[in-house]
Picture (cartoon, rainbow, N blue to C red):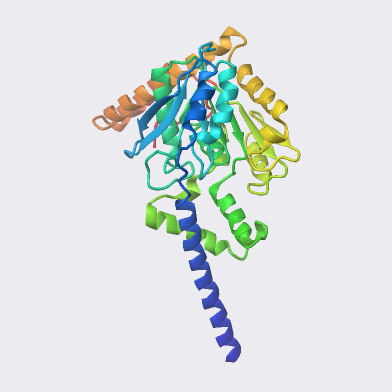
Length: 366
């Protein structure tokens, strides 16, 4: 009898601790520090060195959140642009160093504040669930404002995970992602281990119920399924060239996370693991090689030969056309029979032949 009572008390204590930890982890994920902008003058000076003016720009997200950012176009432009995405608890200023690199090589740069960061609206981050749509809105703004030949994306940490999750909705020419997580569930296991100064095994085993309860807590309190934030799922089947960069000394997001992402699409993903580099520290550990690799990666997918640039324009045109036909199909679907709808789909697939971006493009949106 005493043994049963003791066991019951242990189970109740364990369940209570898991529930408390779940609430703590959930609130921790939804309440990152909002860092204010404090180095605008420095950013303006950086842009001015390349004949660019740092412009305040904004877009409205699909849920009404007002997103803020900076845009700069160098005097000697190469006709292409890069969207730069920062990490969690940071803001656009954290990407100014990368902006300097790209401006010096003729790229226009767009530095947005992620939702719930910097000056952007939004009550909380979603680690790619909503941010993927935000990036699509920025892409559309950049396409209409600057009309670049090709638009590329680069992010670090959370920004890297976000840019990887845009692949199937945003026709980037190529991507660079430094220190991304493979999925929110995977990084949650790691974070639990870090809280208790242990490895991810703790979150995967003993405290796994706390992680799952935290995900449920997010769905109940914020209406967001953070488990859907999964870069490794997004890259599967994609044909967008991706350069993953990860420091082998990263104790925040282990390099195995990038290895998991690459394993889902090894044909189109290149992984550069940097010795002695910490979290997002490749540019510090190997600055010359970092700059050379990143610039070469984008240059390789933009200027040689002319057909490459034509492909970028063709991808964008077909992407627009598919969205237009999706809307036409949805409108017709609401007033025609299922037989007519099937004919419409077949006709649309003949109109839009298969092309290299991406391999499994969702012609009919969910």
